[in-house]
Each structure stands twice: as structure tokens, then as C-alpha cells.
Length: 409
Image (cartoon, rainbow, N blue to C red; front, side, top):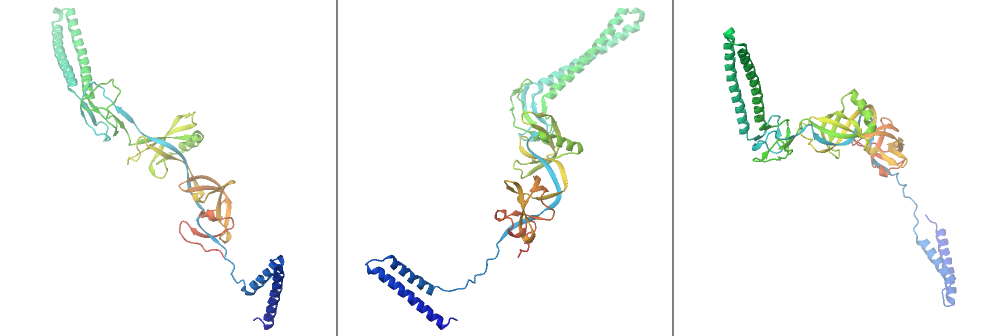
């Protein structure tokens, strides 16, 4: 409560200042212009009036609460960590064959559809077999003729032998030689029959391997010959199938050591690495390093029962060379970069952010192996780091469970 005396004193003070201001203005105006003294008096009047009407309030605004930063965190965990060597590769047929004719003739039929899966021994095309059948029949007839001649020569030899001393030695020797010649001729006839039958078989062109046919190169009615390099069709074996990929030569000792201990698993993925296509095993390390690129070629074999891999397809590869037991791992999203190196934000005492410099190993499948800088059970920030500074108060949400921890006071 303001006393009456105080009010009167304030009124008199305002009156006094107002009087002084008016006098100063009057003096300034006396010469027909506003002087500096006039301005000063006017400013005094305005100031006093403003002070009188300015509301007097106590600064009762509460102090602002400390700002917290919402972040998502994950726990530093222990797990078996696979060590992969990644690369790029190309799928190729386990075996690829260009089917060509081995005899000359006209194609009567084509017995496959382009892109069809054929089994070994399936008929691919048929060449007019009549000339080859005729040659076979001729060879068989020749053998029959020689067999008849051999029978007659043997009878003559028997007769000469029975005559004893009445037959000259020359006659017996001649008959013996005749039997031997015809016997040899029969062997030649067998060979001629075998050759003729083989040529007849070649007229039926069959698949040498099981696989998928490509685009047909020859149509029905065309004349083909064995000297032509153009094939009828190409067959690629896709069950199993191979992937050729490369690795830096510096990794060769590690690969060889791992391969000597156990079978190495190879995973084929799409080129963006997002989808697994097939799993296989390493089957070959090439016998020399490519000196121009400093890489070693590797070959992996895949069962490919679902035909996910196709000859010529480009893929990404992951070669599993080792598995680190009980490794310390964190999500990749927790890793941050700075001019000094890699670091993470860990949740410290009182839910405050702590900057931790870390040393990491390989990263795979969204996880990174931590070699130093973190301990098991600690929590690291995986989302929201852009608003965090060392010492920032945090409101944390655990990424795996979605539970929110209690905020520090």
C-alpha cells in the first residue's frame, strides 16, 4: 500500500519537473526557434510522464526448464560377427556348349523351343538321314558278302586238307591265305558298319549337356556342314551355375588360409546389395594374379535350383572368411564422422550425451564391429544426433523395444 505522503511527493516532483520543462521550452521559444534547451525540457517532460504511467510489475516469470533432446538409442551388444570380403562378379554357365553338326546335310526338323530347358541326350535337330542309312545298309551288305566268301574259303581249305598227299602244299597254303584275307575283310566290314552307323547317329543332333537353350541360329530346310563354325544353338548349364568374381591380391593369403581350414561360403546378391539371390561355396582360386589390376579371380559354385542366377548377370558377392566370436557390435547408424576420426554419442550419467571416440572394424548387415571406445551394456544414439552436443540432456527411446526411459531432472 502506497502512503499518502508518497503520492503527494510524487505529484510535487512531477509538477516541479513540468515547470522546469515549460520554462526551458519557453526560453527556447523566446527567440522564435526551439533551442537545445527547449529540446531538453521537452525530453524531461516526456520522461517523467512515461515513468508515471509505466506499469510497475515484479519479474515473476519462472525460469525456463532445461531443454531436452529426443533421440533413439541402441545397446552395445555381444554377438558372433561374420567377416566378409565383398566384390563384384559375373554369372556364367557351369558349362556352355555351342551345338554344331558333325555331318553334312539338310535340316529336316528342329526339336526344341528357344529358351527351353533340355536334358542331356534330348533331340535338338534332325538332319536328313537317308544318305547315311544307305551307307549303313551298303556296309552291312558288304559284310554279308564277305561272310559268304569266308564260308566257301573255309570249305575249300577243308577239302584240300583232307586230300592229304594228293593235294599239293601250294594249294593248301593258298586256301589258308584266302581264309585269312576274308577274315580280315570281315573286320574291315565291321569297322565300316560302325562308321556308317555313327554317321547316321550324327544326323540326329542331341544335347550334349543339360541346360537352357538360347536363340536358334539355323532354321528348318537349311543345308549345314561340319566345317561351318556357326552352331545350331547354344546350351548353358545353369544347375549348377558359376560366379566369377575378384578380390584384391592383398586378401589372397587370408582367403587361402581360410580355405585350407574349411569350406568357404559365398553369397550372391543384386548389384545394390539389398537382395540375396543364392548361396554357394568357393570352388576355385585362379592360378595367377592379374598383374594389371592387382586382383585375383575366384570362382564360386551355386546349386541354383530356383534359377535365380542367370548367365551374364552382374552380381555383388560376399565371401565369408571368418566369424569373430563374442564381438562387441553396434548399429551402423551410431557411427559419426569428424575431422579427428570416428565417434559416437553415448548416454552417460543423468541421461546426458557423452562423445566417445571409437575404433571400428568391418561393417555388415547394418552392424559394425567395435574394437575400442565402448563397453557392453552402454547405450549409443542411433537417431537424432544432429541436435546433440556433449552434455545435452536426452529423452531416449530404445530402438528395439520402443520404450522411453525416464528423463533426468
